[in-house]
Amino acid sequence: MRVAVLGLGLIGGSIGLAARRRGGAVVAGYDPDEHAASAALGLGAIEARAQDVRGAVEGAEVVFVATPVGALAETVRAALEHAGADTVVTDVGSTKRVVAEAGSDARFIGGHPLAGAETSGVEHAREDLFEAATWYLTPAQGSTAGVLYERLHRLLTSMGARPAAIDADTHDRLLACVSQLPHVLANLLAAQAAGALSGQEPRRLPAVGPSFRDATRVAGANSGIWTDIYMSNRDALATAIDEFAERLGQMRSLLAAADAAGVRAWNERARVDREALLGPGVTGGPVHELRVSVPNRPGVIAEIALALGGAGVNIADMALSPSEDNSQGVVALWISGDQQGARAQELIAGLGFPVARP
Image (cartoon, rainbow, N blue to C red; front, top):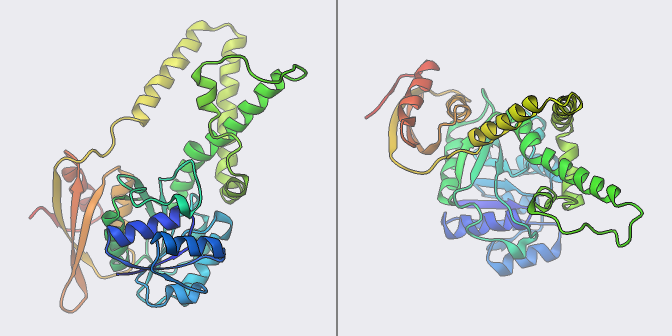
């Protein structure tokens, strides 16, 4: 398989390493930063260094756009302009506004690997960065080509990732809450603590427990990266901030009323919510095979993947087998986890597709 990587930082370089060493791909890359491109070549993250987007995507079967968020939309448009008719183009941005900006092009599937490191730059790229990491895919219902979704899913699985389908709006609402809002709160906590020490010298905290250090670990994260992230998902983030402010006001009211029972109940609910949210995820176990009969129309694979992903059902692998006249086909799905096979079968049947276990 031929792969192109546009943007050769930590994520782009790690994609190149994983695709080459684990997926057996031939990888070409492009980055306008001469140093990054040379370092990626020297590291072995790419085998060929292109001089522009056109040169990188020529002949590629999969294109990863791994530029900073602020450059995603422009680079995705360039990749789609120069990519072949049967090339799948994806991105790694932490917000999915780019999905809408890509329009209805059946070749584009939004993506977001939940992986990273405290360091940045291609020199810190790792082949195993995506091992067991969730990799969100945001196919567009009604337009995403099934054969391209399968190709991308299979490559990501070979790289050690766990692809999971999610619609773009849900993705951005979720990430605003669990990724971007914590960064906002870390910045505010650091500022409030600094304000509490205003006028004192030296202006340093006395010995503190781990709570403050843990809560502010991401304060002041790379401004170049995070300003773009905040702005690209500004609507969902603003909504999350409003909801948080409302909940904070409710807590303030409990304190003002000296309502100890209410505070205790509030704290207990938080414990229950956290345990539910951070409970065991996909841990392997048996894999169940399902065979689904589907018509040959754009978006049918996206429809199935989004239904399963929305219910927390993981597709470990998939394969497409078209009929001789290409009017329909059978999708083989391998579903991970105990009791998930039956749930997947129920969901797919609910979509109106014939489904059976072989």
